[in-house]
Length: 135
Image (tube, rainbow, N blue to C red; front, side, top):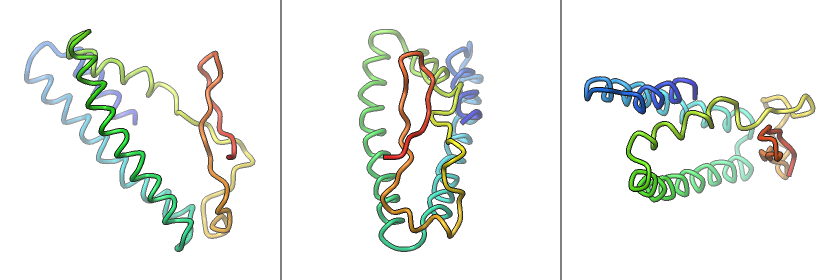
């Protein structure tokens, strides 16, 4: 996500089309690395069967929601603030991971595949810090 945020920052601060295109390429590399990493994490943490299917279904659902709301919000931000803000608003959210797993979270591997009813869910406090809790 650092690569994606770097590309976003460069795109928002770009002064020429050449810089914007290169920044978007950096963003694309960051996004391209995120999907295989997420799939590998799901494959490692959840064994074959209904638990993995549930995790992959949740990933697909959240990706669909993200794509549709991202286009809508991107259009609103562009109309109200300008196109640069579409890139710049992404940067602060990437400064800190959305979820810091506590030491009690299970380690990835086959031993965790039996934990079908627990999910790490990010929750945010009023001060902006984040933590994970089991749902």
